[in-house]
Image (cartoon, rainbow over all chains, first blue to last red; front, top):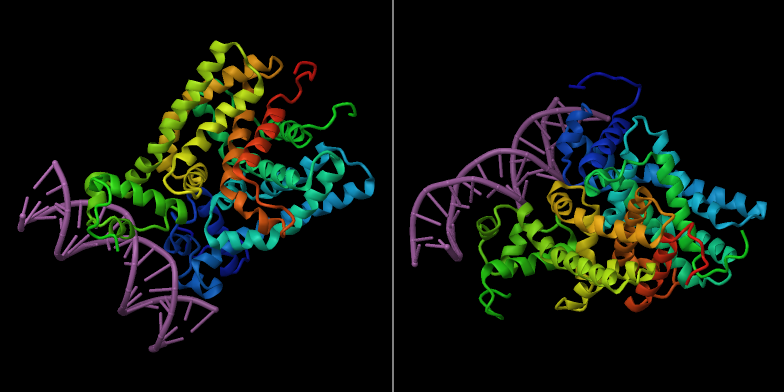
Length: 218
Length: 218
DNA sequence: GTCTATACCACGATAGAC
DNA sequence: GTCTATCGTGGTATAGAC
């Protein structure tokens, strides 16, 4: 199909990443064969192994391409918050969520490719993605825990860690499965736009993060 | 190893389910081969296809064995709440979470097999598990949405659906990944017991569900 | 009915030719 | 750098033994 067409001046390696990303997001890591990827990318079967070493390494490369900038952006936003002196919980939640939504919006096509990819990773207990997560997330976790504790004096470090985990799970799951709401609700729930979903998420998670805090202040 | 040992008077079909459950939970659906399952269960390779029709159907059977009683219990608890007239959000959250924790506790071994299994399902966009979920969860969703709306007058049906999804995601993710907290936190967070995790979850989720409600009442 | 042996095709990986 | 050939392993289907 897209055999010799060189739509963009991308080299084989990059074409493989693009195709793999699209197929992985839609069908899952295991359901997509290297043969499907290389055929679609107009490359030879052995190309993946040549450029990446293994299917596992390809998966890691596909994921890392998105996760790294997202986490960099998160920390960047947290830095801005700390300097600004403002520490309301709402902006903490937004610092966690928005880089993900923006990364998705940057995607070439309008579908939820990035959400799907991300959520597939979070549930993949496989070592292939786990390793990447373990290497990259400790810093993000530490930064968020720190600012949560600063913003909510009554929340201990242990609790902050747990609440961060709840937040991550809620976000990943809803971004991944929000399009199933119509069926799950038997038509009683209309599909939310991403703007609505984002706002609902922020409200829910901010309330959860501050649970037990006194509600006196704003 | 466990070749001809007939530890319990279980038939082949049940042995296959037990072994598959254990291996799936630990390594994932795709990582476990039918050969590994049948060998461990002391059965022939073709046994899975004979009893279940396919690996996909085996997966569905393994999952359904746990999901069905959990959802039955959830609705049972909700019925009790409605009759009792009490409608505080805390008991709604507990009605959602506890059947899962109890199902896990009923497990033969002390590990988190059931959590892992459940979480693997939630992220599996595969049709194999999706179909089961779609068939079984609409009633549960409807019941929880109904009681959330009744308990929180300012929460619309749409919002209730979304918050339920946040709750599901937070629960699944934290049950699945809580044992990674030590690494993710670089040792700064101690592993919570399930009692602690449960209580933290209830607090967080109850706060999220009632977000925007007036905090006058208990 | 329950189970076994076995054959089939697709998969990931790799060695070596070009 | 790229491709072909090949190997071991995966899920599946079936014929037939008990």
